[in-house]
Amino acid sequence: MTLMDFPIILFVVAFSVLWLAARCGAALRRHRQGLKEAERDDFGLILGSTLTLLALIIGFSFSMAISRYDQRKSYEEAEANAIGTEYLRADLLPVDDAAKLRTLLGKYLEQRILFYEAPRSQMVVEAINVRTVQLQDELWSAVRPAASAQPTPITALAVAGMNDVLNSQGYTQAAWWNRIPPAAWILMFQIAIFGNILLGYYLHDPDAKKVLFLILPLILAISFFLIADLDSPRGGLIRIHPQNLISLSGSMHP
Image (tube, rainbow, N blue to C red; front, side):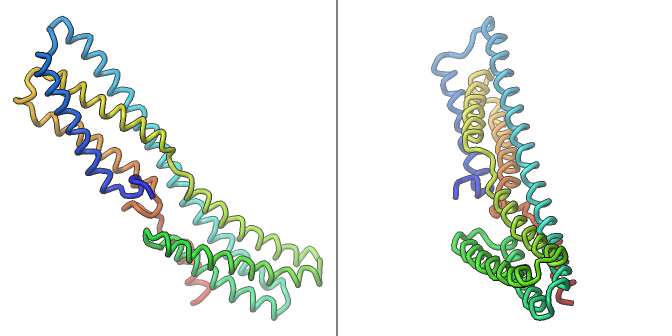
């Protein structure tokens, strides 16, 4: 886990660091006796360009976080559809195999719901993943004998449905691993720090405008918090609720 998995802590750290950067810029200004009037226009252009670049990078990062969040939601729906379809296709198998398959699908569905609702604990998630892999092996073993004994197009539907169930879990896991690259975070922080230093250096009378040292760091910290919250599947306040899987569980176990 990284700092990006703890959005609230990231907010506090980002705000503190950026506020200190602005204060450092003000201290540097006092030490060097500030800017001459002829230099302010050129310096203002540099400050504006830096903040514009930072805004663009934040916007792109926010777009990346939103797309990954939407992707995780889509795969949750796809998993529910795949499991529900295979539950119905169990009727295509012999009676005993169908009953066994439905029982295993019910247990598998419980694990998938637990996967989405699991707390931010590596041990809990690993235990769920281990149990999920075991159930996947049992599910495949449940459809393989019937397909081998009666290799017909009808039984092939049950096998294809099981393949969709297993693939959907892999797609979901890949989506949860797909995060904003650390290099993008480092770049955002670096530009934000330099931007706040430039702001502190640019102000005419920093001591009389202390509130300005709070506004920009606060806005940037909130932006970083929101991006990290969307990008962190388990650590954020905005999480994927497995409503489709829960709804399917209710229909499978009325």
